[in-house]
Length: 445
Image (cartoon, rainbow, N blue to C red; front, side, top):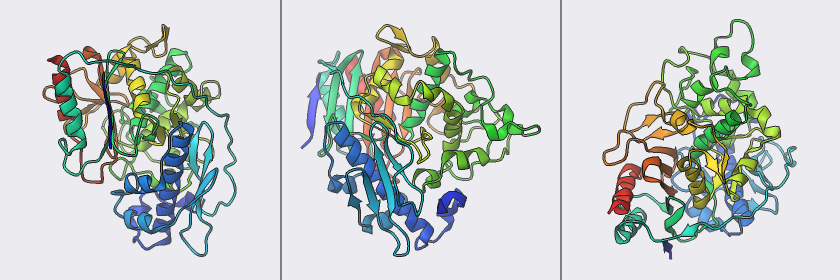
């Protein structure tokens, strides 16, 4: 019943090895076990920390179905062992299980193949003290808004999709909220690439503090040698997916990092340049991982969790690799309400409680399609998608998009944030433009 409220072995593995290796190979089985260990660990442990509860059955029915074709059948059959601080998945008689370790305040990290101990990185715990959102009736047609939200859960915006949560903010008021069975206000889900827009926000906060210049070359140590053409790539170019670095698959799949136990600093800095920086658009996880790696020194005094707490996002966990490098291209777990708070920061032009978090004009910066643009239905700014090509949607609308149907739509001119969470199987796409159009139409009546 839904609730409704209206108011190391892989360290030398090529990135594309998974796609080229038969599904029965040890490499793919190791990756599948890592996928399951990390997903189960993150889902269960962050929900517990948020004051909620997830079951293994719920995770297996939502997060672990409809995943990558080469991993899906393996993940379904692999057993899982759940401990107090870690989750283990056996995968080979000759090798130790794949292990994901939970750290308070930082979520879970997958350890390298063959690792049998704890992760060496221990972090201070986060604090949890969420302030309630103001629940109110919407300005406009409440019945129309209810209908649009209900349709989101009933395949109205995509056959075979699986909506798990919807939250709509109008100004500072919560005007719609609904959850699928097994999910609720205290259920974090993986953000997937919505994390890229969170990364852009962390970069913006560092710019406001005077610690980062996005127009300066990215501080990647491996590139700082005479004659290396990559040394001119700026942080802003990385944010706009225009680095010119090699990207051999759509999205530059980084399975070896996400689920294999490879460290970010081991792999993302090694890609060669194949096009002049700023000359082409190519959506790639590595561009955002590099942008975040370049500002990593600022995290010593301003960790991602610190910014989340300032925004009231106390049920959000930015996960790291086993060495402590943040995987802010994908590995963040957050609730729908927390993501609405994130969107609200942009409605407020980067201000929070009277203090400036983001530079004046940062919204315009991330909204500006100043780099080469992708083909298709949406444009791209700096870590945000642009809905400036969508009929019936205001041209100033920006959005954070993530795999399996994660969406945070920000409509500054209408003072509206729309959050849709999902666990959509591969090949089943939720029509976020149509949903946005219908929600805005209801609010406008």
